[in-house]
Length: 624
Image (cartoon, rainbow, N blue to C red; front, side, top):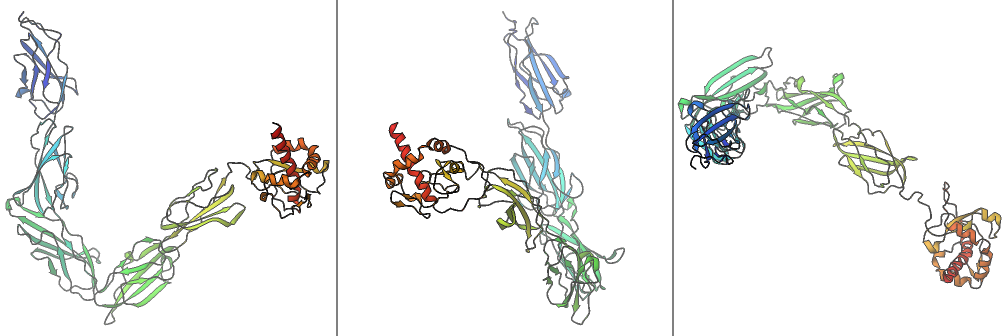
C-alpha cells in the first residue's frame, strides 16, 4: 500500500566524497521504497557534537545552506526516511567525510632571519606548503613580480614543495598553490606568498701589498641583464683600529669595480651590495645581501694559512703573497717558548715553507713577514693566524677475543684519529717477543690473518700509523686462547701395540709393566707417539735397521718375510696376547713430555711384534 516504509532497508548515503574542500557540501542518498521525506544529520567526528540537522527533505539530496557553513574538519552524516503515515526507516550507516582547506604556504625552506622567510640568498629556493588532506597532489603558480611575468605553472606535484628548474634573478616573487584529491576534488587557490631573492655579490680577493693603491672588484650573476637596473654600495672599514673605523661609504656605483683612495698602512675590510629594480617599477627595488667582507693589508703584512690541529709532524706552512715583496722570513717556535725558535728562515722566495725535521706533539706558533725590494720589512703576520698543534697518534683500544677453536680469529679495535693504517703484532704468551703474525699495512680497524694459529695462549697488540709515517704507541695487549676441537692433538686414533720404553728385546714382566701403546704405522699411516728402544732383531733372515721404515712394507710382505718364524713369534707372544688386545683400545695417558729421541733398533723391535699381531688377526678373521 502506498506510503508504507520498509523499515529494514534504510537509505544509503552516496556523497560527499571522503575528501572535499566545499564547506557547504551536497549530501545525496538512495531513496527508500515508500519513503516520502527524509532527515539528514551531520556530526563532528572529533567532538561528537551534532552540527547540522534537517528533516522534511523531499527528494534524495540536500546542500548544506550558507548559514550552516562547515569548518574544515572530519564529519559523519546519516539519513533516514519517513512514509506518509510518519513511519520512519532505520538510520543509514554513518558516512564519513573530511573537509580540507587550500594549502597553507610556508615560504622558502631556507632564508635570512627567522622562518617564515621573506628573503633568501638561494637562486633556486625550495618553496614549501602544508597540505590538509591525505593523498593530495598540488599545482603551483610562480611569478616574478619585479618583471611582471609568470614564470612557472606546475601541476601534479606529489610532494608539498617545489624547486624552480632555473636560477632566479634578484627580485620580488609571488607564488600560489592549489590542491586536488584523487577523486578530482579541487581546492581554492591558497593565499599568495611574497618573497625576495637577494643573492649577494662576491668581492674578489685582495692581496696584501706594500703600496697603498687598492682596487676593489666584485661580481654578481645579474650584472648585464637588460631586464633590471642595478646600482651598488661599497663600505670600507679600517679594522686594526679600536674601535673599527669607517673609512668610506660609496653609493650609486654603476660599475663592479672601484679604486680606493690612497690608504695608510693598516688592515682593512670592504663589503658591497646591490639595489635592483625590474621592468615592473611598481614592485619597488630589491636590495641584495651584503657580500662577504674581504680583508686586505697595506704595508705588506702577509696572512698565514693554517689548518689548526694536525697530525702531520712536518707541516707545510703557507701564506698569502704580498705585492711588491722579494722574499719572506719564517719564524716557528713552541708556544711555551716563543723566544726559542725551531725555525728562523729568511730569504724564502715562495709563499710556502716545508718543515723538514719532525716536530714533537705539542702547540706551536708561526709568523711570516715580507721584505720589499727597497729593504722595507712588513709587520709580522697576525697572532690569531699563528697557532697550530701537532697531535700525537693515540693508541687503539682492542676488542676482546672469546676463547674458541677458530684458528683464524677476527682481530678488531677502535679507530684512531690521524691514522691511515695500523700494525698488528700477535705472539704466543710464552714467547711475546717472537711474532706469529706481524702486519703493518692494515687500512681499517679489523683484520683476519691467513696464518692459522695452533691451539694455545696468545697476546696481540695494535698501533696506528699516520699519513706521514708517524707511529703511535702500542695498545694495551689483549690475551686470547685457541682450543683444539679434537682434544690432545697427539692422541693416536688407529690400532696400537705395546712397545717397551727402555731395555733390550727380551720380554719379561718388568719390561711389560714399562710398556706404552704405540701406533701400528702400517695400519694407520700416522707417526708413532712414543718410540721403542730395542736392538736390531733378525726376522727370518730380513734385518730391519734403525733407519728402516715399516711403511715401505705391506702387511703380507712382513708376514712373508717372517716365514716360519711367525708361528715361533706368535708363541712368544701367546702369554701376552690378552694384554696386547686390551692395550690396543686403551686411552693414552696425558703426555706432558716432548717426544723422545729415536732409540737404536726400535723399528726392528716393532717389526718383531708386528707379524705376530697381524698373523693372529688374520687367523681370527679366518676362524670367524
